[in-house]
Length: 204
Image (cartoon, rainbow, N blue to C red; front, side, top):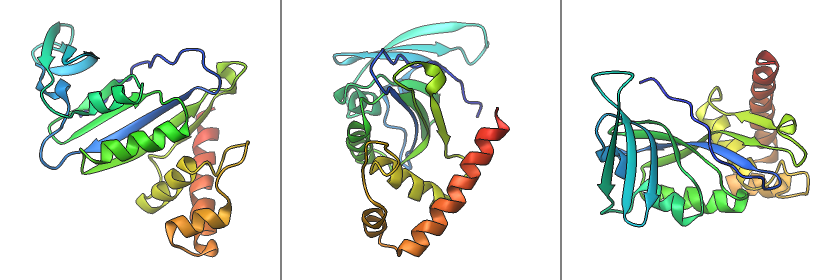
């Protein structure tokens, strides 16, 4: 399935965080937009109604607009509960990929925990932290080329604040959280960070 890229409203907050999440659903996607017609490219949740803009299945250039009553605990409602704006990248009956803008890593941790309650799995695909001065200070961390183990390790490190300049989880604390030795953690992070750096230089 082709994934669509969309911008995410981020405001002018210092250190803006933009993340891309993948949600897997074994029993059907729990998102109000999944009930729309065609491929959703934009939607807004207002009270108990989801306003969906879809690309027609019969034409790439035709858009349809639909309203969907939210009658379940869906991903959109969970995001809204954390003050996050969802931007759908792709969606089907078993999986959805979205971008959103949690206020900080604490909100991101809480958001992922709540999404995990309605999805079979939630994973962090990438994140961008915009610098305080301008978008030219932005740093992209793309986790899609990592192995599952590497991605889970880096994801845990990011959420724990291990890479924060202001200080977060220490190396030993992170190893204990993951229930692995410091040596094993060092090997995982070294391998993952090397791949991330190669990806950064490749895209310059």
